[in-house]
Image (cartoon, rainbow over all chains, first blue to last red; front, top):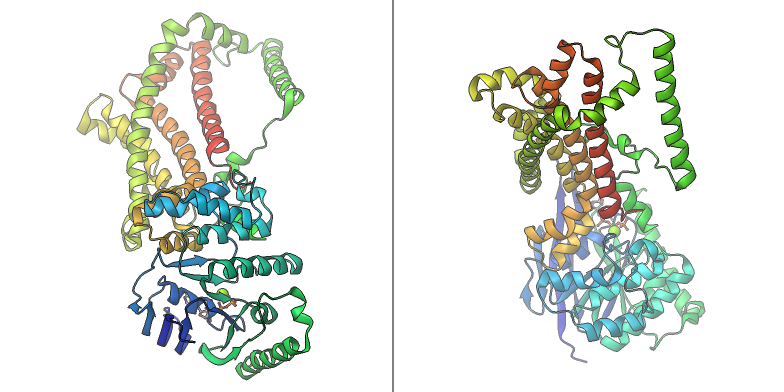
Length: 259
Length: 285
Ligand SMILES: Nc1ncnc2c1ncn2[C@@H]1O[C@H](COP(=O)(O)OP(=O)(O)OP(=O)(O)O)[C@@H](O)[C@H]1O
Ligand SMILES: [Mg+2]
């Protein structure tokens, strides 16, 4: 297997500086993501997962180190290659679902790829809701909508920050299956941040475990379950074993922190 | 839920709890949160009460033998409004409305531009804000005698005063709206490569629209007060001037009629912006 490296993170540190204090949100982070790989990032709250993702998107400048996308040094967002899905769907409430999906096209001054949009709406089960406002959609539908908005740009890389964090367990499982279906069809490279260790294991090829303050990469777990994955996978002993060991890591790092 | 979260951060007409503190907008949103009469029955009841109040006032004035020069009877005012409108009131009404609109146009254009400026260059805020606060807290009518020394008796001093009354209101509220725009929405735009102009047009402006409308509403009401007040101070034109004129001649029915016209203008402004808000900025329900 000699897949190309999509994202290369070299010794990245991100330090937030305010008048009163300095926070080392990410420290000496080095790793890479291969083409078509599904990586999940887990860690205790405040350990720097969002910060890492924003650094990968080019939305935050890194303090030290470098990020390369396809060998190119990242200095600003790459709207054509990297898509971002934010926590809390982030649909503009004054636009309909369709207008939300078309917004990135308008910003880029490109014609809307109607064929792709229609196809994605179909897969996402959002057909017939094109003219609904976000306030009229359920939480799960909004999340699917925001994923459709990102995928409609056909980016090679998808960065997702706890996209299903606000959903109930059932909707979340549904969303996970939806995401896997899309990913298996499109073979995007995905970096997916989550609080839920089991969600991470269920989705990922590899799980990055982060420890807090400073936010470091403390462990990498390969997840080799065959695909496509069934939702009952989470009850298999092998799955639970990995879950327990990652949980111990995350809790351990919290305990060391004393919080 | 996601939307609840967002709604909390979005200032709107329905929330009377405008934030306090240095950067907060002028707390007048409560003015816009008055419940609207729903359905035929409620509207009829509201109108019926108004008729009862006016009729009661009429009878109290008759029973107490109040002279017309102390307090004019509602019927006398209404009669004057109908019979004398074209001869006594139309001209001054047009003058006041024209001055008001000119002042509003200039003031709100400058106010909105300054709001954009301090949003793009937050560092400028500390230089501009003190003057805005001074302008908001000073009654602009007080400037009229001073402005008249420089600009004479024409329309200019009044337009300037009205602009100074409306502009800062529009600015404070718009700037607050722009500044409060959800950081993730801005990041979303940036992740798609939006330019600063596109961020404004597609995200900041629509997000801030409810606040901007509140700014325009309060600014307009302040502007109307300033317009009428300025006409009372000097210049020989408009409804304000008529108030002084009729009261000095003790023509209280006519005085009352002008007062009713001024009040109607104020209510008109309020209704207009409430309507605009409901039509174009009611997305956060
Ligand atoms: N803009 C900022 N300015 C200053 N400090 C920040 C900023 N953003 C994050 N931090 C700090 O950096 C650290 C990491 O934050 P980050 O949001 O990346 O954590 P996270 O792992 O995403 O947490 P959560 O799981 O709760 O979302 C935290 O201590 C936080 O307080
Ligand atoms: Mg986070």
